[in-house]
Image (tube, rainbow, N blue to C red):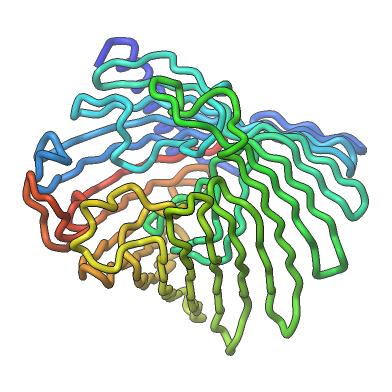
Length: 423
């Protein structure tokens, strides 16, 4: 690692360590509140380190063991002009080091801003064989409130999902089922209009710009938008019988979709979450498919919760013998290979400072599984420490094999440490 990169890491480590040991209260480092207008400026630092124990397969992994480290620094600005207008800015600087000699590779799954969006708001300050430094804008939008109509224009986070682990209706930068840190969802370049139809009903019109892949750009996408890769979606939601019902339809990149969702309490303390859609690819050589997630969740009085979800992944493969031909070619949004999955998760607040969570993700086609655990400890009101462990199980695939024996058998054993500070 170069000297300048080392100094930057040491600086961020010192800042986060100082914040973590000092008593703190919730505050912004700049805040203004007038009679009608207000402005709030906050910061966030995330220090990440991890190690992977890779499967014995040199076709996918260069080494048996790989390490990495990263620092994310964010500036968050929220401004409001009365009740009619608001402005949001979320920008970050990301420095990443990988011990496997691939500075742009993110095997920890912690790279911010991995959404499909213009590279015009992303800049690479440094790139070498083992490090990369990027400055990017994660969100930049203006919101207008006009009575029952809300209009948001610009880079924004869009989530149409109701499920927890498998989210087929989250078409734009979805989280993986094993992601525990979900505070900052990456933004996409979009125009969203929400029209209130009543106290519990609304319709959302969403247009999202798409981009072609571009090797060598700052984020892997082109600067100019591509009309054929863009999306237009309408979502209608209402409430009936204590449940929220939603209908979603439109075009998402290269396919037409029609689907919906249902969520709410169906039994005493039992939450139901169902979502999915039917997709018809514009390419006539590809078959139509169905994506469907069904989940139940319950929280006990002692702060213990349990969740379960079944996922029918129609774009996936029903026979593991065909994995080799389908790897990374699915037209679905979610990065899964097989056709059926099951996730069972639980969480418990041990005490006011410590919370533990875990999830077991099972591939029902090849019988592999991914066990993910996370412990979150509060160091102060404005800082926390996180430890995550991912343990995959499944049949390993030998180097040079023409077919993949199991999906999660290709995953490494991963341990990730994080120190986060808000100010």
